[in-house]
Length: 160
Image (cartoon, rainbow, N blue to C red; front, side):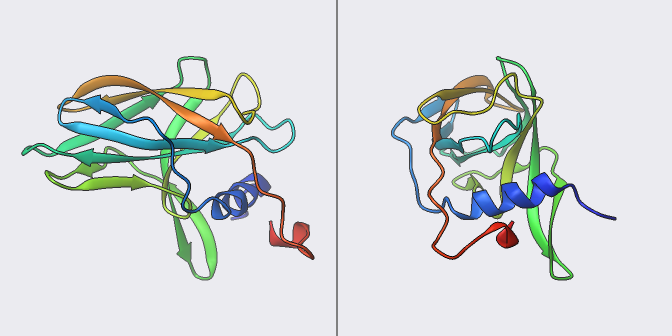
């Protein structure tokens, strides 16, 4: 089955964003959500991805049950994985954040897939996300929308 072209574009863009951090942390019960960011959109596409880290400082496991976009659109958790030499994505439901552990949403791994956005993500803006946890309940965070770096010299669309 052939994957839509935008999946490969997002995977390429996501691969360019390792190591960046955001300044603000958010708390929900024993959970600390940090490093929330999203790359700016590609052209006029109303899709995107978002990343953050959730640390569980408590003694009880928790689960990320749902993500909503207060401004409109859809948000779902997906995992990127290499399968038979092809990068694929699959939905993930209610991942656990173990006591003393963390859940990393990062390029090339677990991430929030954004679709049907009301507008293209623009660098410098904040993307609001509402997170629903099994134990900690509901909290709202903002992800910094960051510019995409320029492609490396000599690289063209063949890398998408």
